[in-house]
Image (tube, rainbow, N blue to C red; front, side, top):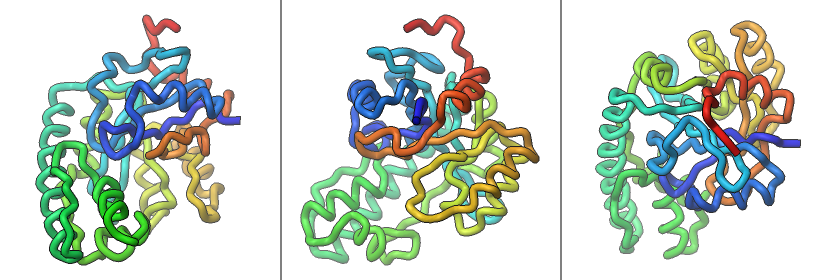
Length: 263
């Protein structure tokens, strides 16, 4: 049974839930702990590394994309207390996201001959654009990615991200735990898992939708003395599709700064 879903997105990036909707979604799923891990930004309405809301512990987190030697990967930071340096990098990334979003929107509108009526803004991600296209065409969200805005698509625009070393340094200063997200979503899982030598944790539990060799993750956990993390990567309001059971969560919780956190 999932106790802690440590990978959830809100409308602060490309999720569908407002922050105040998360506790109810967690209770529906029987989850008591949720990490808010919006893309490349921290949530402005979370003022501490973790806090209780309606009986659910919300862990302040972030998902940060970085440039590793083999490919881009995503880091998960948990128990965030933003530093000036992290805030500056987030501001830079969000400016880049808005600029990139505008270019992708322009590309899609030109390709399809439609008006998406979508304004570029900080926090805008490709899922927003895909949903806007799906609402105005017969394409599904997945088809929009596959045919238009995926990494190899005709409307894709790359964005600037920090190096792996810079990302780890920024998160280490601001977070209690820094881990690698979903290692089997990368083209080279072995190269991604090798990065764990510089991290505290790796996402062990994740709803990939395809078979993965979890023994390889377990080997990395043993080799580098890592925490196992896990989550649903929810962009909707369905939580608990993956995450930590009570024992794994207890080990994770021991690394969080929870002084003064009250239910």
